[in-house]
Image 1 (tube, rainbow, N blue to C red):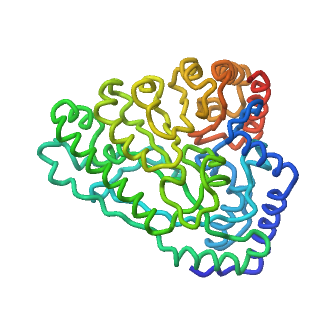
Image 2: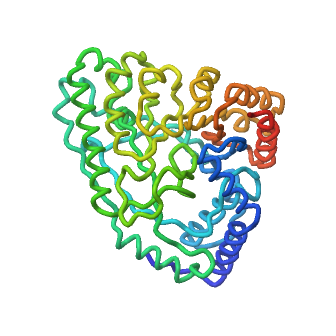
Image 3: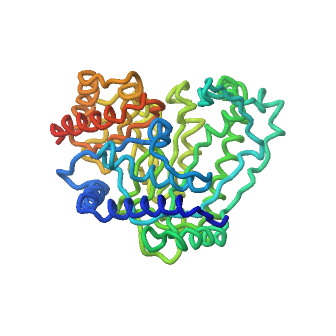
Length: 417
């Protein structure tokens, strides 16, 4: 789609491009990038890194900063602002790249069953939640509905055209280029989008063989997707600014950054299974782990977990996943136990603090914040520690609260060794 801008909108966007370029080349950003690289190498005596995921509460920050008029210009403006807001307002460890990355990946449509949702919104149109329409109720009766998942690979030509369109306007300031993207697979999430969670749990008991068959089908489709991506030549390196699911970065020296052609085994991948938090560790090990391991075998490095409490499934399952390099330590996780398991290992203690700290109220409860963060710092002694604040949906338009939150985390981290 051609980029068509009025002179006023173009002037505004060029100004933001210059601002991004200036931040990206600043001594402060160069120092931060060096710190991220040392962090990714698990070097001793590196400080914990701190990230605030803007996306979920961007509507509390970005609209009031926007000046463009046309819909297309405002979309580009939103992108520029989302790349620099953390640096300017929160002063966390978000990096600002000197370019715009365009990746060309792929995806699949699990079991070839369309996902249908019913959404709830407030009076302002903000989404409050959603419910998936169940398509598989009784696994035995409905198993015939499960088909092979269609697999799609992105169009490199369309990607290059988009890059060229961008560079015609912004290329002299913030050029666009082909970049990589981490792989992503959440099989149990795909299942609960077509099957109620309770029905999924009971199917493991009522129809164990069919449940294994369902998991095997979906796993084979994810493995095939990664092979097609590898064979197609669309994959690129993931060793620096590229994002890895759950709000972190790809910075590492353990993967290649200079290959002519990349396979899935040369890049980062992600897995989680929040939906199985309600089953026992033994059931997870039987019904989920073998299939997740098969997918993980196709990755170069693995980041695992979201909101599930990984301590419950650590010993028999997650710890045995290949190339594990980051593990999510959610608010429901036994921090002390996981600190003991990860101390001295080259596996990132990727802490997700409670979103309530900055997501509730207009003022920050500094005492509660210090208590919460200090507990993490104590539990993660001897670990490579990273904080990623996610799942904050409202900050009541008080960005100073987020900045102070980052300051307190840094103060608490001074005691981390």
